[in-house]
Every structure is written in structure tokens, then in C-alpha cells.
Image 1 (cartoon, one colour):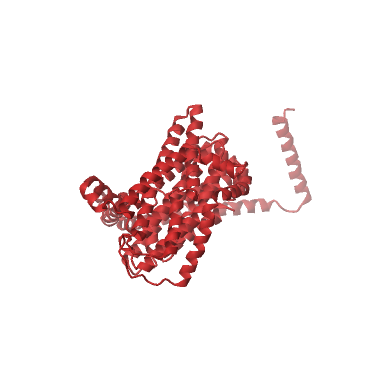
Image 2 (cartoon, rainbow, N blue to C red; image 1 turned 60 degrees about the horizontal axis):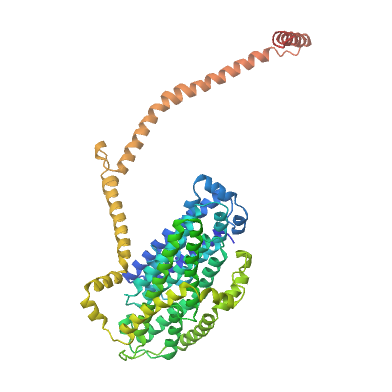
Length: 558
């Protein structure tokens, strides 16, 4: 119920991800992947830690309920100019944990190296969970007039939409099934983040909040089924290359992957069709509401987000059917299949049944969540299932979604399922497409950019060490920082040797001695008049009374 304990759990999950990635640490490549995952996650964690410290400095509490009940800390943050900064630090922590652009490249490496792929879901879904946890607080502040928070919500929505499209595009050229699943997870989480960002921007938070949290909970099962399907096939075939998985004929796994894929590519009546159209409709609603008041940034943002999400859906249909075609198509070459343990079969079957039930009952689940989140959202978004269906079906989003699904799915079907077009020949005829494919295989060079930044920091550190630490500033003829401190300490020691006899003993010590002598002599003089004779005491008392009377006459105003 508070930011501090949540951050502790946040870090524990991150450490688990690092250790699982580097589980085979004796293999140099796996150890490197673990270090890379840890480094990228720490970037987001530092940003989140800055947010937590900033909030505590102004609010004096970590508790979510107390933060939502009081707005004084938000007022103080706004007056100091730190409200937008702190909210963006929160967003930095969210996108780092949720594997969103530009901190998304740790997830493909983790799924490749870890012996337990399911841990990636607990790590990634913590990001949109935190966004949903803090959304009511920031939306209330935004509705109260703190307009700078609009940039926080816009950034969240745009980062989610860009990630959804970019990761889907990158997945189209990957050969490793776990990398494809990783990019699929990042893409779906992008839809969650976009929904929550749009919920913050809309006048009524309820619809966006409910859409984001519903995707968060439903997709956990779909992504788990996708990952388990990929692991199942990789284990049975004995390969981690999609182009070497041909010939797999286990019907249960094929049906499980089909259910997950149909949900992912927005085929009705599966969950993806309802949920993705819901998010896309929220983007259009943002533009329509903004057009009434002439806010151009929201108008263009709404249409831009809608276009990116539609494109992401079409590209998702392409790479999802590509995976299905490379693994299960009739044109595949038969291979020797390894026997799968019964425990894996039982787990897969159980997850398949649960996912299928959830996948086909999403409209009813939405109504259930609608009532559950009523204390947070403050209203009922949909009265019944019919109300939700009417909201989705006649919308422009539905038409564009089906069009994107048709284009992306048909292209993938011709290339990888029907095999009417040879992808290799297509790349030879169109050099631009081949170069673009290589660009996507290299993960849009984002991983290369990470490496260059890391190498630049290493080179800078080495240069500072060589030129400053070892050689130093030649102008002062000092060969390094160490020698500088040696010289400084020796100079201070010689200075103290002069100060001690001259200042310490000659001035301060002599002053203390003279002060003691003066106090002793004064006390002796005063003591000499303390004879105990009554007449002397009366004389001094009379002198005191006369002195007081003279002072009163002179300064008392009599």
C-alpha cells in the first residue's frame, strides 16, 4: 500500500530477472546478457527512485491512500516546478520495467537466456500496474488544473503506441521464437500504456483505466500461453530457429497457439478484437473532444495514436501468422520430434483451457471489472454486454482494424502458409525490402546504439583515468590526482607545524592562561571584602541603594 515497499518488491523482481538471464554465467554471452539486462533495468529504477524521494520530500509519506487524499504535496511540487519532472521520472521507471521504447531491448535478451520465461511476465506487467496504481492520483490533479500533467499522459500514450508498432515491426524479421514472443509482449503492453495515458487525458478517466487494467489481466494468460507454446515447440523440435521448426504436428500445441494468435491479431470474437478496438476508440474520442475546444496538440495526438495502433495491429497479424506458418504449415519438412514430459503437457492443457475461457468471455469480464473498479473510477462505463458491443462494433476503429488484419494476414498467408510467394526471391528482386529486413533483424539498430553509448562511456572513463588520474594537469606539473592529494597533505602538514607553536601556543594558549589568571585575581579581591562583619555588609547595602536611586533619577524619567 506504499511506494517504498512496492519499490523493494520492484527491485527483487529485477534482481531475479538478472540472475535468471545470467543463469548460465559460465557462457560468456549469457553473462553479458545478464549484465545488459541489469544495466537497462537500473536506468528505469533510478528514475523511479528519484520520483519516490521527490514525493516523500514534499508529501512526507509513501502511502498511496494518503497521497490520494491530500493535494498539498502536488501544489508544492507544482510551485517548485518539479511536478512535471517527478511525473516523468515515474514514467521512466514504468517504461524501464514494462520493456517500452527506448528501454525495451532487455526483454528479448532475457527470454533468450532465462530458463524460466514466465518470470518476464511478472517483471513487465509491473510497469503498467504501477501506471494504473498512480493514474487516479495524477488524473485528479490534472482535472484540478495542473495542466503540466497533460505532457505526462501524452508521453505515456505516445511511448506505448510507438512501442506497440516498433516492436511488432521488429518481430517480423526475427528467427528466434523467444525473441518474437518478447516483442509481442512489449507490443501488447504498449496498448496497455496507451490506454492508461488516454484515460488520464480524457475528461472521464474510467474508460481508459478500465481498458488498460482489463488488457493487463487478460493478456497475462494469452502471453503465458504464447510463451509456453514457443518453449514447447523448441523443446520438442530441439531447435531455437523458426526456420528449423518445420514438421511439428502436435495438435494440442497448434490449437493453443492458434487461440493465442487469434486473440493477439484482433480476430473476432477473441479478446484482442474487443480490447484493441476499445483503446483505438479512446484515441479517436480524444481527438473529437479536443476538436470541440480547439486544442490542436490533442487533436493531432489522438489521430496519430489511432494510426500507430492500427498499423501495429496489421503488422502483428503478419508476424503472428508467420510464426504459425513456419511451425505448422503443410509445406514443412518432417523432423524427429522429442518426447515431451507429461508435466509440461498437463501444464499446457490447463493453461489452454483457462485462456480459452477468458478469451471468449471478455465482454462479461469487462462488466465484472467495471463493478470491481467502481470505487476507483467512480462510475459505470457500460451498463451491460449489449452496451459494450454497441460501443465497439459500429465504430470506425472496427472497420480499420479488420482492414489492417486482412492486409497483414493475407500477405503473411501467401508468404509462409500457402507458400505462393518465395520470401527469398522477393528479397532478391527488391533490394530495399532486403535492406529493411536486415535493419529489422538487427533490431532497428537500437541494440547497436546501446553498445555505442556504453563504449563511449567506457572510453570516457579510460580517458579520464589516463589523463587526469594518472598524468594529471600538466600545467601544474602534477602527474595525477593521487600525487595532487599527496602534495596537498604534505603542505597542510607543514602549515600545521608552523601554526601550532605560533598560533595555537603563542596566541590561543597564552590568552587562555591570562584569562585564568585574571579570573583568579578578581575572585581573590572580591573574597577579601567578604569579612562577615555586619557593619561592612550594611555599608555596602547602603551604597547599593544609593547607586540604584541615582540611576533611577538619571534615567527613570522622574
